Length: 456
Image 1 (cartoon, rainbow, N blue to C red):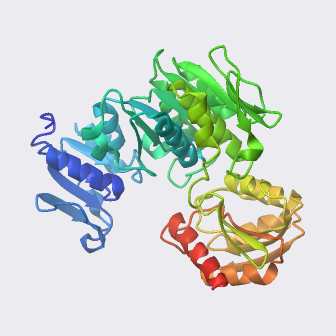
Image 2: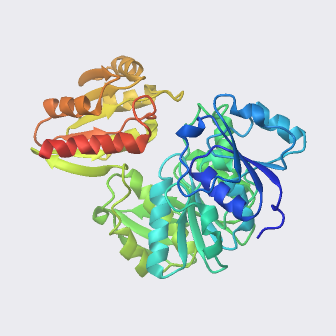
Image 3: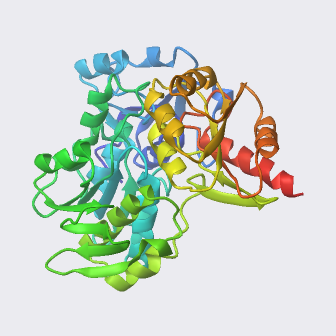
């Protein structure tokens, strides 16, 4: 038991995956817990939680229950760090923390942390697979793995924890991982952050607190991540899909590791099962990070070329009447959607749109208009009209079907109607999902189910 938490009055803001993980952990430490959530108590999921000794403050005014009586308040990632109620509590002596801050304080193992706007899950999972192939005691934690506080009893100094880390988690993180992987950083979550500057600033914490025994693995191809080199005391390696660097890169369609005086070929990008040049960045990042942690070339090769990617990330669903259907529901902003379009040479029917999170779609519309292979777009959700405006402004020559707020059944029916053998139907929405779906997983799953129904 952690005696520093025993009988401490703690608040947990948000009762999602991290909130439940915190509740279980803090209960075992003897803390006095109050959970705050904007949902009603009837809407909360209590599976796996002993709620008998936990108080709940729920509903739209849930934050009004925060006061200076608390010793610590743990916020979930979805709760903005600088909410007025949190700042006031902090001024009155309440410590503000989070599950990930607590994990970094208690974890005895080396941590490999991955951040960036997109590609975190793919890169983290591939690093995990390589380390597993190497025979290391490795764990995948966080959004795509196990809850991290739940892992603590299993971890030793020899263990390795791989985790994707978002800007929501990094914004007040005071420790950095042993290996920090920085993918490309574009615009995202501007409905949560004050502005782009704060978003990028939050990401910087992944390298800011490193020392000279740590490693920073940085994307060389873009200025924003490249500038992170100046912020770290760690040994820096790069990865690139087009430049020869000290690290891992692609040249002449070969993936090479050029580290610690060696130069080894991993293999040919044409043999990757991951589709799209943007995934070359994720692969080279994972290879470089794995090499830093001590994985050998054989483990890297075996893992890289059998990795098929993650669900909802350019995931092949089915081929129906000669038409290939791909689920890229995880693309919740324009940049990964542009990368997804570039992954195909076949004619594409592109499904776009969803809920608004304050992003610009002009660059994406111009990119789509210039792409030779996008023959039609199907627009859905709250921002369908805005995307249509941008496409027409960019002089897009293909067909535009604006379905607005509709059902996935009608979306797939329209896609089937306008597609021909040899085409690709690509769900890559470039926006959030909360207008019509529970989340991006629900959106992707509904798309897949409708595609499967075409086969029946």
